[in-house]
Image (cartoon, rainbow, N blue to C red; front, side):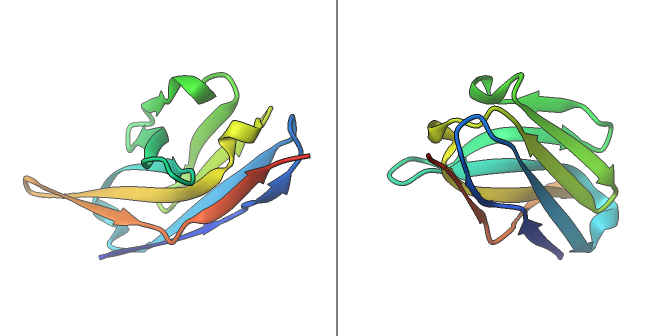
Length: 118
């Protein structure tokens, strides 16, 4: 089992910055990748950014050049969000993918609200 705790959300003006953090605990030794998803009201949850244990990253087109995902250590991942836009407003969820033999397990955090508004 993996437990995830997110922090760093809040209210910010357009053009501002926020940094989200996600701390993992439990069976972290088999985490293959971690990432951030977001879900805005009335919309489906979507991938924002992900990073593998080999530090390969992937970003949604809408955040490329503005957001940066980093893996601080084996149990913490951060998302630096710059030049925030109102359309970035959503609940942001941390995801950890744990691989055991051939089975992939997904673990989700509880979510943290990001609101971009003047």
